[in-house]
Length: 383
Image 1: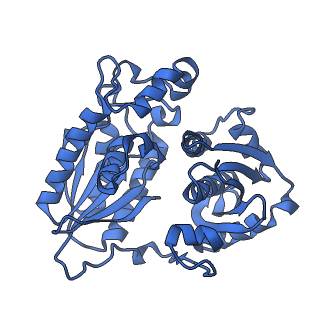
Image 2: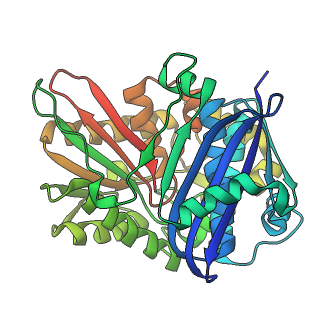
């Protein structure tokens, strides 16, 4: 049985919209012990965006602590609680995008055997998360595992307090230097920004409508480009994209920040979902739940006109091997499932567990592949 956890989350904006940040923590329900604390700045955003961001960070931390946890998310935002509970409609595009990301995390926990529920609490009972959100608004980024959660994640002694304060200056975040065992090939995987299909949870594979980025997606593409430039710190790199419009457009923004031209490789395309392309996942979960579960669990399953996960993996891993063989640093702008395929390959994750890997729109994942065949995953899903 999964662990019983409580997420407390908050967010704020000084100006609404103004200087924004979020804060969140995860407690053990039985003891009340804080297992994780987090905070981060968000730039100029609204209160609602900040509050959703806090919820997402808290759910992600709970999933890290126990993928099968039973989570109660407590917030003083009536809006977020009611929208996530499905009782209020979500009209604003930014809110729809963030709610989708939170729901994907909740679904990930549910598929692991856990559950997520949402509870409104008065502001005076959310003071710890509020204090962390002020840290975020002050420009401080915190990702801190505590107590037994730190032991589980870091394999440290039981009485050691593990604290990580991430430098809020993104220019200082670079890939780690190579060790004395040769020069690694460095690979940065970037998921494209959102389209209207993404916002409405519609499946969108290589055989579908091929929509372009919407306004939010274009902003995510620019942010991803800036993040990649800071990450590489002036190092030479090439940019490769899938052939689908949303990846090509995101890749163009990334390539512009690096002063290079992007190349296309259709083997990095998203899976072809056949007759399900363009269909809402929510509709499938309601009307064809067994078939949806089969697609997620059976690597040899394909929809009519589509491709299996095995076929997807074959072409994606062929593209991955070409990148590794080329050496140097390559930024690949692609899609969620290709990113999952690469991570599952290098980490040895079986197919029935790959949905535990998160890859948010506009996120970065970085790997180093050494000449002796060893692979180091520097980080995943960094937004």
